[in-house]
Length: 297
Image 1 (cartoon, rainbow, N blue to C red):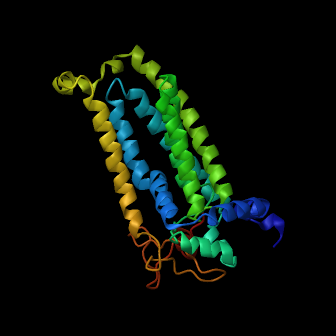
Image 2: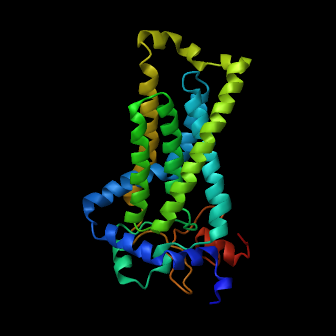
Image 3: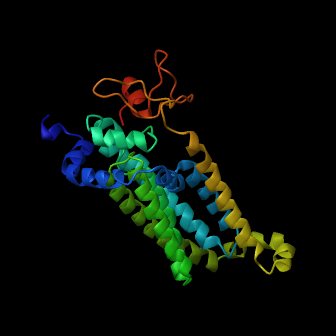
């Protein structure tokens, strides 16, 4: 193919092939049942089933004076990272998932099957899970560092584990992960400064008087202010379990795959919702459903 006609994704494939395969070999060589469950644990922290409820939690945090800055930082980071990744970069790069493009590589494909053969329904670059985990983690990191709380360092570690899980599970190229780390970090930094601007507005106007904590004054007094952190932790735990538990049944031989089978057998997750109805009785992923319906990215 003429290099000029290559998509950005195909150009990235060629440019980073050596790096990507070296990292795949590193992660593939350590595969075992225990680490596969660990990878599924951390990958859940970047899933939309975790991220969307976290954005809702961010809105709730904005209603309380003591947690308002965390709420705004979360909301802005998630919004910016999601728009940049899913609306701008993925449709621009058009990078196909490695479990589709590397089907001829026996080592890679055995690692992919060995890790549970999970799948997604969209393009690969950058990693959406990595972006999501990083934007949330770095936004909270910056906020907690401002408060000089040592727990701040926990968040980047979680983001890196989520990033690594996407490579271990073989659903992303390592270069996708690098892209996700960059987008997520930039989104978090921008969100942090936006939050500071908004907080100045709140502090200088009557908006600063908004504080839902007044509704729970009696509970706060009885628990010496310890109720709020416990409730927030339980909320995050519930959100995580909502995202993590379905991962036990994802992937595998029984997964519903895209019906596309021309230049490769598409292992993407097939969509079955009303937005992507079956075509001639067959279900397709987002990418091939749009292609078959003449919808350009």
